[in-house]
Image 1 (cartoon, rainbow, N blue to C red):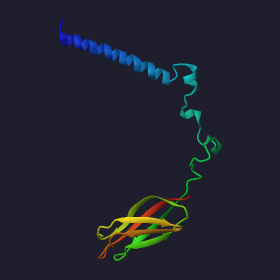
Image 2: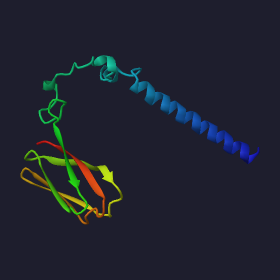
Image 3: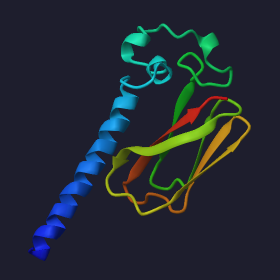
Image 4: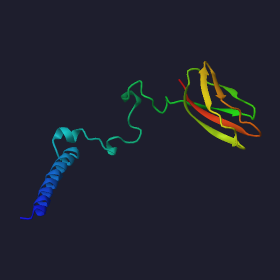
Length: 142
C-alpha cells in the first residue's frame, strides 16, 4: 500500500472525527441539547426594545441616563504655551483631538492637568508664526 495514500486516509478519518465533535458542540449551543441549555439561550426576541428596566441592572452600571460628558476647547495662538478651561469638578479626561489647525504649527506636545474645576493645557512649544491650534477635550462628568 502506498504510504502517501495511507497518510491521506488517516487525515480524512481525523477530519471526520473533528467534524463530529464540532457538530456535537454546535448542537448543544443551539438548543438541540438538554433542556438546561435550551432554557438559557437568549435571542433578540427574548428582549423587546427598551424592555430591560434599570432596576435589573446593577446600581453601579453606566446607563444612558447616567452617562454624562462635557467638551471644552483650548485655543492656542501663535505665542501661547498654556491655556485653561472651566470644567465640572471631578470630571475625567476621555479624549483629546486637534479640532482646528491654522497654518503649520511648530511641534509641541500637549500636557493636560485638572485641579478642581480648572483644566489646564500646556504645550511644550508655542505654535509660532501665524500658526494656531485648537484642541477639543471630552471629559466624563463625575
